[in-house]
Structure formats: structure tokens, C-alpha cells
Length: 86
Image (cartoon, rainbow, N blue to C red):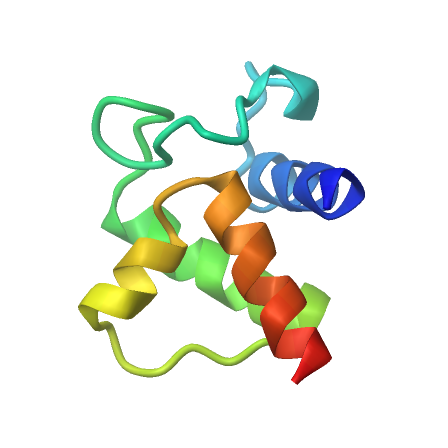
């Protein structure tokens, strides 16, 4: 899972053009929105598109479950692993 988490971190940094942050600096449990990394709703859309392209995953319409997947890097990695296994 650590490799997948690092891939997700790299994708976050590259797709959102976070030039001041290195992927290794992002804590897997750190919140992606609000107090944590500070991403916003536009970032969420861009990240969702990048995740679809990179990992061939699908997100339903925005629900509480989908929001939970975007809580942090670890939850995104779990979601991607589950989608790829299923």
C-alpha cells in the first residue's frame, strides 16, 4: 500500500501543480481539505479527473461515501486498490 500511497501523493503534487510541496512531505493520514493540505473543491475536481486517468477508477456522483474516499491519501489508496481488485 505504501507504493500506491506514494503514487497518489505524486499525482496530487503534479496534477494540482503544488510546487512548494514534495510528495514525501505529505502525511498519508493528513486531511486533504480544510485544515490539512488545504485543497478546495476545484482541486477535488481536478484530482478526481487525474485519478480516473491514472488509475482507471470511477467515482459516483458526490456522496458522503465519495467524500470519505477523498479524506486523505490513505483512504484514496484504499479506494483505488479496492476498485482495481474488483
